[in-house]
Image 1 (cartoon, rainbow, N blue to C red):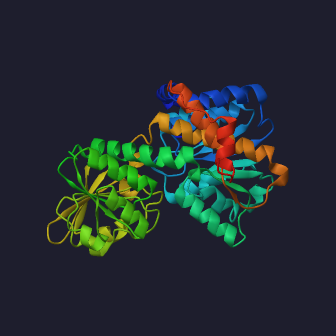
Image 2: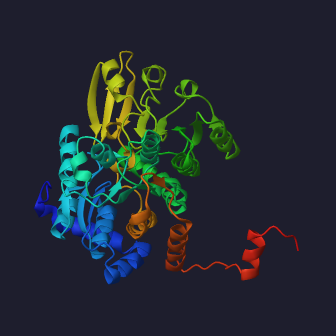
Length: 415
């Protein structure tokens, strides 16, 4: 039985779901195929992704494919209670409440896995962590699963190296339809939408420090630059740093950048990116936020200890006053700013990401008898199918290689 906050919120949640379904054409094409073929008939799928309207749509599409779907969130602050109520009313077992404690959040995950899933969709590795530990007994039917994030894939590969991976997993984040599109354009837009809506401040003319220049960092820096910000990028990878330099951004260590920034956005997937020593040199009223998966990139606990007082200055903004009178402002408690303070990625972006999830789950089912317990790359054929669905939905077309051109590209002979 679903665990949600308030069933009476379902009407508003249903409107959100119906709205995004109108802008997710690639997933709609897959839904038609699934409804006809029922590839997941008799299977249980546990989905742990930010519990909002686009995720609800993924759950509904998988259900159309014959699956019994169990839906939960992947972050205590990103669940939308009205969407959880709506998708539960629409027949999906749903376990999600906004603002729960870490302990309550884990219990919701455990209850989701109690179905003994055949397939999982993970976002950050919480389900895999439980299935490899506390919830081992729920892994007895596992065929495999998909991972949505960079951070989650890093952890999957570490598990694979140490031979403690519970089941075969698809590296969905590494698919072209995911990291080229979702990480760059989705993060780039949704982060700044959340920051601007939450702070009601202008971006133009400010100095923005972006920590990390992977695909998410590229999108975040690009959008800030486009809105007139002076952008500084901090990095640990020399080639990412060179890339940022060629794209026109200043490069320096965080130890130096900390004194210049008006707005800080961390997108590294690592911990302790902004710490006490950086707080000591920041400007009064600097804004700090995180767009990496876990809330450990900005050391909010250290800032709390340093502060003489703190107060909620606006919804989702806590100001920490330091002994010298400066105030530093943290958005969304240091959790994913685009979801803790916003609506997440645009529907058209998640259309492609969730299309990868849906087709990767299908691939796992079709190849279940030959799978090893390792991390698999999403096949190029899945990426290409999704790309062509998306182009067609946008009214665009591209050239097609002739057989002679294919032979030329794949051969060694020189004409």
